[in-house]
Length: 333
Image (cartoon, rainbow, N blue to C red; front, side, top):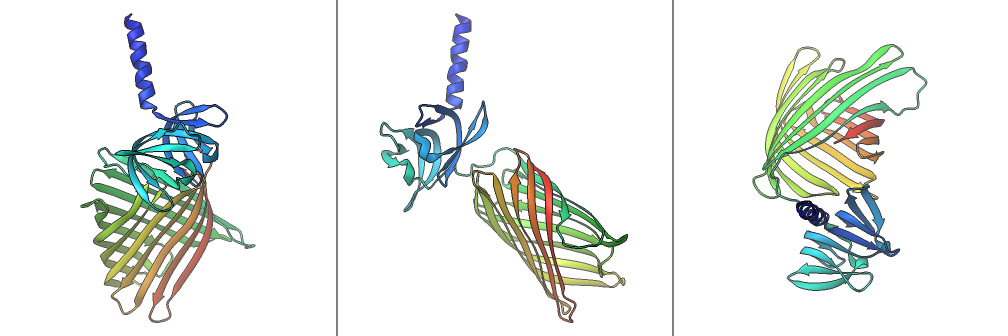
């Protein structure tokens, strides 16, 4: 009797923990946790087969626990749950009063961003090669890592990159840089950011650069399909030239970070940029931007195509305009 009771409790707990369900037009039923609905696709995470992407047109009805953000063509609602409907092709939105809507009317269904109660760690690392049309013999080494840890109202961000390029036996690039950001979310979307960065160049005219600043930022959206945020800072920059001269300047820094999963989370589009406007007679402004697409080979390995643009506008014809295109293999976590 005790074994039977324990088995019943375990089965009951399992059914409750896997409450979301899809009923398909071929009679099958998929049970798990619905991650999102968008673009006529449903991504459901199952215990037996991992993440599955199902065409919404093959779903007769579905059930999902809330709270959920449901977007239709003309409105967006926060609902407590979605229940199965007796009418094929429809669901019941639970939001005080039950509302029957067609599955085809659901443009997007996402869980709202929860309050961060425990530490959450995410990031990526990559090794990249330059894409170029050249007859010269070159060897590239480009290693980079970017990671974030969110704990309650605080977020720590750390990035590092090392580059070393050799062409026909001559070293043409040898740099490394690192940066650290500390963000405090004093409101749901607003945060205060403190940023510290250092760059070392063993070949260029600017041997090293130190940068520290702080200012407000705003997180426009953050959900399972990606995020977008912007920030503005007042920075202090210290530059050491190859000749040994030192330059100190104040600056305004504007930066943004964008990432978006596409086509059932198989591709990820990302774009990061920082524009620095310095209070200096020699340097007017600089732009450091990257744009890329990652293809998720599996749950942790990625293949990426990257485009980088480094631009520095000087007042005495000392402009720097460097564009690079790279192919990278990396890991996500």
